[in-house]
Length: 368
Ligand SMILES: NC(=O)C1=CN([C@@H]2O[C@H](COP(=O)(O)OP(=O)(O)OC[C@H]3O[C@@H](n4cnc5c(N)ncnc54)[C@H](O)[C@@H]3O)[C@@H](O)[C@H]2O)C=CC1
Ligand SMILES: CC(C)CC(=O)C(=O)O
Ligand SMILES: [Mg+2]
Image (cartoon, protein in one colour):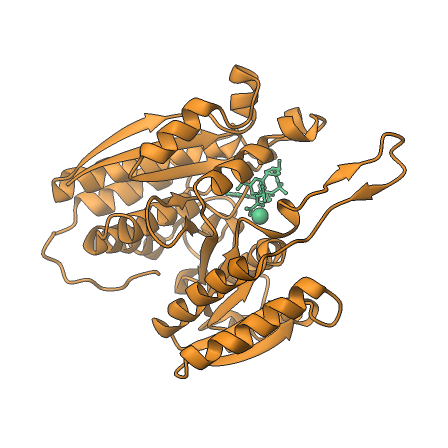
């Protein structure tokens, strides 16, 4: 199969982990006889430096024509003082909005080898397997007005949602729950926010269409606590943009590292954007030590969701599983008796796992 993939490395460790994704895709193409063509484009701080904007028109055009997009991360201290329209993060928000990618799927499933890599007790973390369905193109990150007064004495951000925006993400979450353990937790702040009251109302209306799915509502503050004290109570969590952003970084603790969490940003049909949950990690950028697994698992999500390449996605996930079985891990993790490796070595081990695989092997496990 022929596929056009746009690569958006962005900034910091984004550059390093997108290179890993490309090597993994090359191995998949060779093993399964596909033809992947790549177009690398600028976004974020790199684009501000080259073109004076975090989301150049050429990048936007390329993304609209692609079969799928892989993004590393954007941002870093170099651009922290930029005015808001020249912030790298703005480029990513514009990309998501331009493509209408309203649903961000963030699976959180720990690997058994990494149970003790979490600071939480093994008996708490064990068996946790959840999916955060985060609304991605509305809420506080997109509301207007969003401005600071000239005298810098007052500031406003706006949390706005249209009913339609809530309905479509809630539907996506119900559909996802149907394919999993059929339990949906809607997380909001309905004791205070009008947007959350409408959110809760929409969930209540929609649940009649999904009688096989059990539904509960939780307030975001206590949900944040339960996520790390009793994570196995969750199957699918649906929530608005900023709550989902924060809860998913928190949930990464269950897996041992933020460097383990993949994501897919999708709409009802069409192109998808696949991006790790983590950011540009300026504290380790350029050192070659970043964990590439979040990006590699995002690549597996791309194969499955955008290209319907289930076996190929499983091959990537199984190779990651195998590498961890051998005890290889990057510096953000620890495996008892294992060996610490850098980004390139980790990637090479995953690539070797894919290349040495017998294509007729049965599918052992699928990550998401
Ligand atoms: N999707 C994106 O492009 C995102 C961009 N950002 C941007 O990234 C920059 C840094 O933000 P932070 O709050 O520091 O969050 P971050 O996610 O970049 O890093 C948080 C911590 O996790 C570690 N970490 C992250 N990814 C890792 C990986 N692959 N391997 C090993 N360790 C990893 C980092 O070293 C750091 O200690 C900011 O400019 C922020 O706006 C933040 C989140 C998402
Ligand atoms: C630009 C930010 C909203 C990126 C981020 O933290 C995320 O999407 O998780
Ligand atoms: Mg985030």
